[in-house]
Length: 119
Image (cartoon, rainbow, N blue to C red; front, top):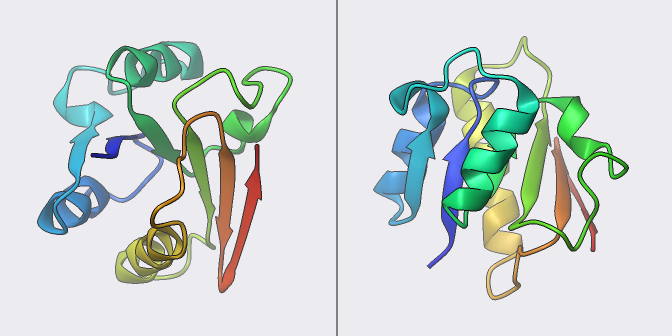
């Protein structure tokens, strides 16, 4: 089963929505990592053997987080002015498109109506 750690840059409802769909998902705000730096959040996701879901563009830096060296990073790039249900819907749509593919080591960029994967 795919596991997700949801960064605090994502809507509070994201982990709840992922769990509703049957995924294992934790929000960093629920495990004492509110305000933690990127490295600490990343290390926590790795310890959980989970894909990190974030809106933080720093996680898209493959020099800091090289592809192939982690359990997956999904960066959701949806404008902040859109409602949270749109953000969650774009993420879920991307996960449906990726169904059956391993996220391990991948950097996935989710944008409105667009998905890019770098392995």
